[in-house]
Each structure stands twice: as structure tokens, then as C-alpha cells.
Image 1: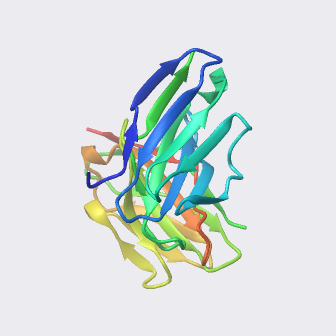
Image 2 (image 1 turned 135 degrees about the vertical axis):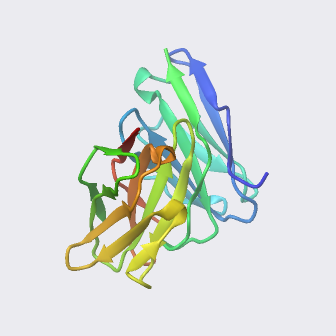
Length: 115
Length: 113
């Protein structure tokens, strides 16, 4: 597709279960970002990929969170042993540029609800 | 280090009246500045960006913003609000040569009929 695609759009899970969220960026975009948006909050940076490598994982809130990117394209964010505080919208963005002047293109997000 | 402050969490305007959404930034380097809009249950969309060219930046849907270095501000304006402008708006700063984008906490714009 032409834009950033995220799946699932909605996920309801039970506390303690693992979840995987997928992001398919715009073709050719080397930079990929994951953000978390909690209700009424701004965007919280989670991780940045340049190609397949993640030079900045500083925003991952705990070791229950991990992410990978394969083939310089699709990325998966995995949350293990989910907790209620993980409930949020997880947004993925990609960019053609690896510097600060590039526009970020966002997907519509994956809304995670942990019961 | 960079930071950004959106001075109003909520703004209400009547349809047809001007819009002003305020943003102040802090940056150790020449910043790039952006405004994004998020409609309900949608991703963020770029409205406009400043990257050290003209200080008055025009964006989509009639929005514009002025970079004022002396005031460290990048306020978003529109002469006449439309009902479709109701959304959440985010001011974003990024430092020169970096990959990091710092988002403000957002301003929810309500447009009254």
C-alpha cells in the first residue's frame, strides 16, 4: 500500500499474555519509529530503527518490550507478560530521511487493551 | 537537548473565527519544527514544517506557523476555523542532524458551530 500499515488495529488481551504488533512502513523508508500514546498523553518514544538495526532503544519501558525489523521493512513490537499499564495506542512511523528534516509518516495505530 | 511545550491542552473557537495554538521549544541546536494533526482514531498527519528556510511556513488546509527564534516559539494559526479542523494538534521539535523527534503533549481543538 501507499501508506504505513499497522496490524492489528485493535487488540484486547488478558493480563500476562504476550502480544505482537506489526508495522509495514512505506517502501524505501529506512527510518522506522515506534511510539506509545496513552489516553490524554503525548507521544512517548519507544524505539528507532535505521535499516534493520536499532541504534536507539532507550524508550522501551521495560525488558518485557522488544522490537525487531527484518529486511529493512516490516517491524514487530512484542510485549511479553502484558500488564494493564501497557494499555495504549502504539503508533508506528517511517521516514525516508535519517536526519531531522524528514517528514514522519504515521500508521493509524494499534490500540491495545489489557484486561 | 530538545524540549517542546504546548501551552494549552484545550482550545475552543467558533467556526469562522481565528485559531491560535501555542508552542514553545527549547533546542541546543538549530531545530526543525513541525506541526502534526491527529483526527479521532487516525494516525498523525503533517501540517507543516520549518527547517531553517523561510520563518513563515504555510501548510495544508490554510494553516501557517511562524518561527520566532527570539521568543523560541512556533505558534500555529489559521484565519478562519472550520468544523473539520476539530482534532488534536502536536508540536514537534528535532535537533539538527539527529533522528529524534520530541512531541508536545498536544492541544485539542474544538470548533463550535
